[in-house]
Image 1 (tube, one colour):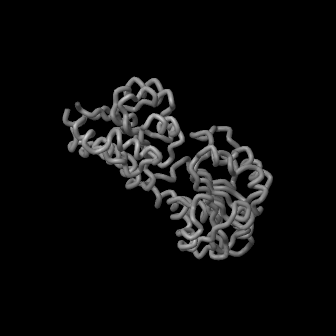
Image 2 (tube, helix red, strand yellow):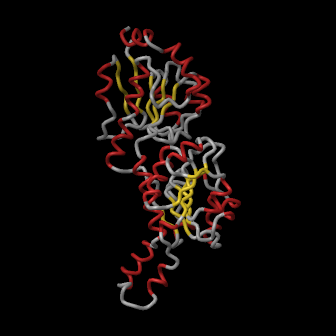
Image 3 (cartoon, helix red, strand yellow):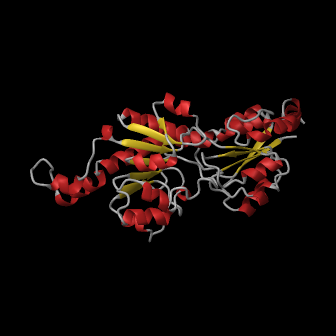
Length: 348
């Protein structure tokens, strides 16, 4: 029997790792299918499926039609569009790409932080519109740049010390900042080994000059930064979100900015994407918006689309995939698909 691999988000002109399946008796079906019905009609008899598990609807309804499927290989770090509980129940391994844009997202986070701290958008606008030279005397720099603080005297608070949070923390340390972090699932000793001080959530909110969010979107984290959290922050604090828009209660963020509860924000992700034309964030001078671009560099983009295929190849060879998310089914999955049985299916 020949394996059937279905790629549900195959972007033209991108290397999806097709050459890797030459080691298998397999055929690859490619398309871009955005709806449940589209996915069901094209994947029903697939042995492996590749798709954007942060965006395409891999619901229980979809998963229950995948009678032969052993893996859904995700094109993303986030996996909030796949029903992971249903996949686990059905014995389907789900993977993501957890390490493809660590440098890019952490770099943009630091870029947003520096842009906000140094008032770069406001100063750029003043130079373009008024041809200001800030060494020419007068109070222009104070008018536009006040208050501006020395970064090495500031505290960066990281919410979520996963791979991207850790990379951001290390870059903050490189600026000479004091870095504190809250993550109930990270060991204090691991954070301390990076020179990061573990604190509770309330302490982080109260002590940070910059707060950067790096959590996945889960029932636990949805709306975790809301009105109460903003009121605990310093009025001079800048809030940065390069995680997921729904981790923040957006109306509370807008009120906090309008009422001066916080100083400003760098927002890469919003609840509605693309952001709605009437969203008040668009008109706020103390907000920088980057339209969910933090993941991008040419190298990261190539890795994003290439890396799911090695997960598929491993799974079809009867090996548990490196980036498997639902580890609780690993033993059961290996009993069903592992070693000799997988080889026989590929040759049948």
